[in-house]
Image 1 (cartoon, rainbow, N blue to C red):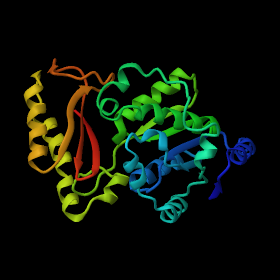
Image 2: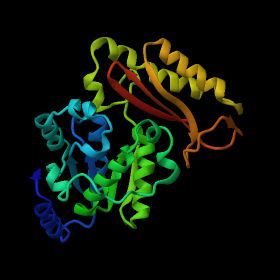
Image 3: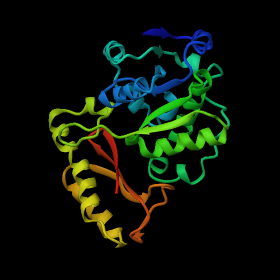
Image 4: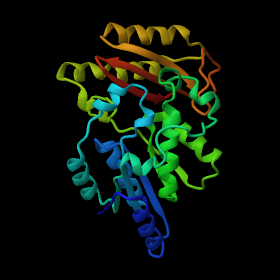
Length: 280
C-alpha cells in the first residue's frame, strides 16, 4: 500500500495509474476503522478497481468541539487493517492540505430539505462540513466509484445530492450496514463506550427491529413515541426516532402501506452519540 500526504503527489500518481487501471474505487473515512469500513475496501477490491482510502478527521463537520477532540484515533492499527484488506493507496492529508484557504468562507451547498431534518436539525452545519470535505476529496481523487455505508443513511443522500449539484460523474455505491453479533451497528464511536454502555447500546437495534416487526398502515405517531420512551427508559437521551420515506427522507406520521420506509434513530449514551437506521 502506498501512502500519500500531499494532494499534488497523489494526483500525479493517479494520473500515471490511469494507464494501468481502467477504474478506481474510493473509500473516504475518518479513521478508527472497523470491519464496516473494511467491507467497503473489500467491495471495491472485488470489483477489480484500484482501491483508494482516505483518513481525515474533518473539523468542519463537528458542531461540538469536544466531540471533535474526543474522536478516536488508531492510525497504526488502521494502516495494518488496510494493508491486510488489500487497499492500494492511502491518503493521509493534513487540515491545511484539505483546506488550503482556511476553514471559513466556503459557498454553501444548496441541500434543501435534506439538511433541515434529523441530523441536519440536531447538528446544524454538519452536512455543509460533510459536503465541503467530500467535495474536496473527490476533486483530489476523481474516482469512478465512491463507496459509502448505509449506517449513515442521511449522509449518503446528502453526498449524492452534492455530487448532482456539482455535476460530478463519480457513482455512489451504498453498502449494507455491518453489525456486531448482538445487532449493534459497527461504528468508530463504539470505541468510546464503557462496558455498561456497550451492553445498553444494542437497545437501538432492538427498537428499530421492533418498529419493523409491528409497523402497519395508518398512524405512526404512537409507534414513534413508544420507541423514544423505550430508549429513554433504558438510559438513553434520545434525539429522535423517526420514520421517513426511504427515497426522499420525508418524515411520516401516517403510512399508506405502499411507500418504502426507513426508521432512523439518534441517541446519547453518556457523552457518546449513536445513530442507526433500518429499512422497513
